[in-house]
Image 1 (cartoon, rainbow, N blue to C red):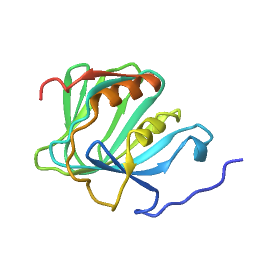
Image 2 (spheres, helix red, strand yellow):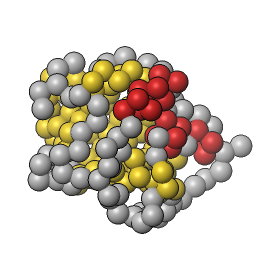
Image 3 (cartoon, rainbow, N blue to C red):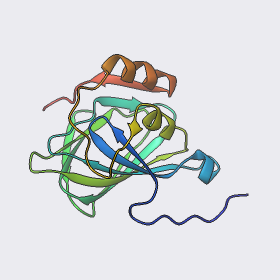
Image 4 (tube, rainbow, N blue to C red):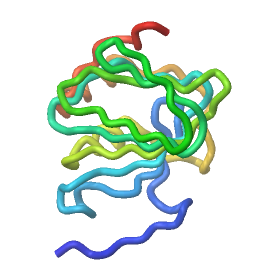
Length: 158
């Protein structure tokens, strides 16, 4: 049986993921597989690779900053209060504006993809952005494939 859960703003497992700070708010274990939920703090100009999820949908809610999303080559820039939905099997990615940082929530449903983010991360030493480091692209691509994701390359148009 699932248990009610409540986490304060700074509660949750804190991770450094590809130059961002993640706070894990919900996982498959805490939602009986319904969804995974993260809060992310991303620096100015941070960009995800262009990628596609084959096993889950992804939703975003922008809390602070400005983010440009790209779906099948179409760019859409959004700010605080915006909601963005990325259905499975649709290539997508996002980039934080140069004036960043940005803070957002993202949810994967059903749960499972959160393991990808956790496995590719390291424990955060503090609730701050990590020191800049180059991503391990071969590890990212290999791990993505085990979670039914394809890394398609850098974001087009940036």
